[in-house]
Length: 279
Image 1 (tube, one colour):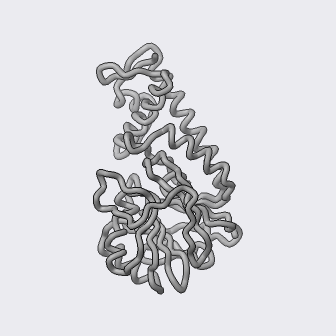
Image 2: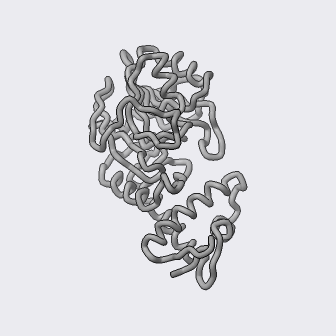
Image 3: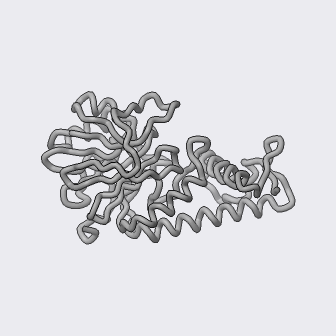
């Protein structure tokens, strides 16, 4: 199957680009610093459609989805409840009658209300094959990936992407969970990952190992920044993220907070009056 994957990534907005047999990708028009060219929505099947991550609640985008589907949309599968991935779920369901299934909703995101929450290991049958749910908390507490059984493909949502690292935002996100979920994906063995943003990850196990090294290096840099001194999160960002695009400063601060929480859980740092220091 991996030899038949289209690795090129435009994207061509409003067009369902073939990725593999009976599998297409529609990229939403919501590009930005945290979404790259936009959210990838995957359409599985030809006679009936399974949509993985319907994308943002945007009228033009939903019109694009309906126009390219080419067959009835039977189910909407969601990796996690962020608005750029799940925002369109309820409106697309209302227009098509499709069931919304997948990640558990977050209490703060009332727009995302699945008809059914998928458990780890649960299988969803599609025209293309069996989707096996893989619980991968970290980016969010309820994040799910989907392994397309026997086809060397894994839909990796925001957990593993080729173009960037995932943002981990406490308290819903957890760095400890994120790292453990990377280990879990490495054990699955799927080679090609289809992420929520950007082009395919052509060697999933290699990318997972690369992300682990990146996070371990980031943690080491945070600890070095705290040698002999206490710093605020913002001061750590300035010391560690050299040459950072200002548009990404907020995301960097959230990731540092996630690292700091995990370091504190292990007794390696402490927080005092809003400043972090070595324990």
